[in-house]
Length: 165
Image 1: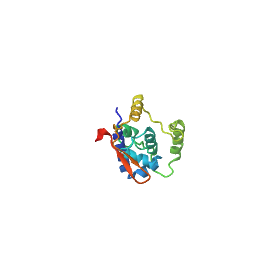
Image 2 (image 1 turned 135 degrees about the horizontal axis):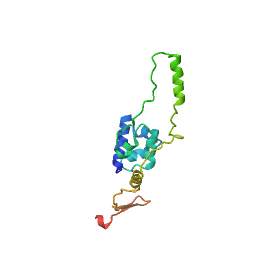
Image 3 (image 1 turned 120 degrees about the vertical axis):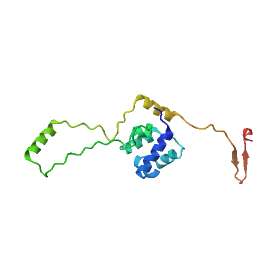
Image 4 (image 1 turned 180 degrees about the horizontal axis):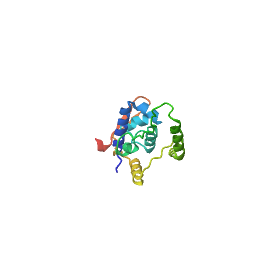
């Protein structure tokens, strides 16, 4: 499974469009500096692991697998936790007594979130791919095109390397 930063950026754009948020509002809700999101969306910077973690934590209804890898659906499947509605307001005494016994005998599931942190299950391969993506630096080979020196009297000189002439 390959992680492509361009794909992540497009999925972040999709999230913003779906929630009808501009870059500043999206960044603020995620606890990210607006310039970080702006630079990421404009292609100046690639998404960092910190930025992705903040987005995943701020928007838990969105699938991290979709955001990072493009797998599955954008939104997480939510399980209904609503209780069945009884036909009468108070129910009968037998119904309430039996339901309280059932509730006591059924152990409640332990919460998986601790102190506001999300546990995101990544495979070792996915962790390595994320690490490699962040370590790669796609900077184009740059050459000096010219050097300008400005003097205090308002004059200046331009130096152009011989390879650019």
